[in-house]
Amino acid sequence: MFNQAIAARNAKADTIPFTVESRLEWFNSHSTVGYPLHVCETDDGQVRVWFSQSAYRGRAALARTVEISYYVDYAQYGKGIGSALLRYALDDCARIWKQVLLAIVLDWNVPRFKLLE
Image (cartoon, rainbow, N blue to C red; front, top):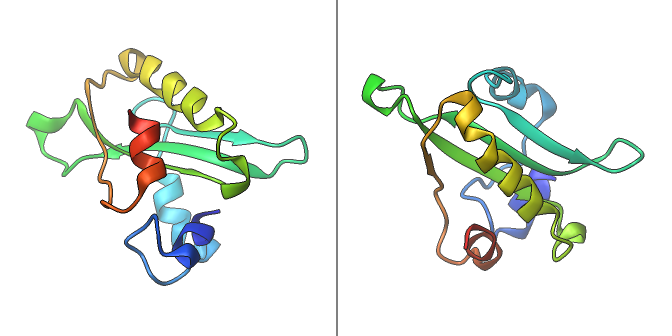
């Protein structure tokens, strides 16, 4: 799904597709305690939406700030899955002791602006 957005060149700043191996460090940097990675799967186990929270700049004064990233499979647009996962992640902030969520959005990524609104 991540590479779907790269190929479309309308949602990400990355231009080269990722391999599973190249994303392992990022994947392993998440935990249910501090920086969760939430996913929504289909019945056959395919991830269709994911939402992650990552440390922002690693500075102590920003310990309660996270950078959020999320991707919705294009086939899932308009079904409310991304909104539901975003609401779940926002509700989970108190549990993981986070207060500020920061998203970097490219100005042409209209669906991302709509989800954040």
